[in-house]
Length: 404
Image (cartoon, rainbow, N blue to C red; front, top):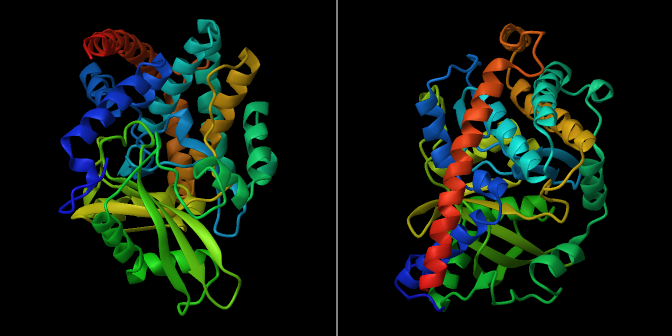
């Protein structure tokens, strides 16, 4: 799968076809996987429903706030917190959109775990309670909803991870080479050369050296690079893994860098004038507002004429995979994860704005219902549409696979 010398490997017809097939296969694995990889249709269907959302203040939102996009995230100093970990769709918008996306993701996961509808109703009820708690407590850890066991287990795993764990997981060994195969695809020397120049540019080099406590005099050398077959919605866009070596006054060190194309968001935006026009700069700005640990490890630039974001991967960065859980775990996860989102939104608001937003949510939340009527109705309608589209997707995927 060598790249053509005159452009990135991604744009070869054969590679695009294989990436499309892999994305279709991932989305066919489960209804929850389909929800996670179907952001564009999600917002189109939400608009078609003509159901009003609470009018939240314009703040940076994740835009694709499903369960898999939250998890343990490390700071530059290797401190760990549960934060939003993927900001591809981030915009300044209505925070209610993140609540809808998270509620749909949790409800879909509950369906996949064969939990009763009553549990889903309780999850959505607890979601709003947890979200309001996150808004109101912010840095008050004492009154934050407790971590459910499924989250605490992943956090403990993250805290115990070192570079050797990341190396064995991502590059199969501690040797400075990326294993070419299913996850990593070979690049041409011309493409590697362009990536090396990009990583040596002042803003990117400064980020890598700062995160590793190196002076500007230290050297950053590209040891290896590959196209990275990673994610779901990102399949079909630029995605590179770069293994770099740093030398300087301290002992030498290796780092694994993720280079990812940044494209226009499909999430509804408000106050577009406040958002950077460069898609990579928009992602960095959203990350710094919503997920400070991740945002401080990111930079933006242009590679092959495309906007990209760059981040150094940390061993502590892990994804929450909640595919099977009990009723109690489901309700606890809903409450805790929504508190994380509430904290991310709330830190951008003044106390008066936070109080007004909580008051608006209360007004939309009659006490005689197990779940807010507006959120429940939207989730039910979206679940129906996603389920039908998922079955059609699986049918089409099976037909294509049989033909191939």
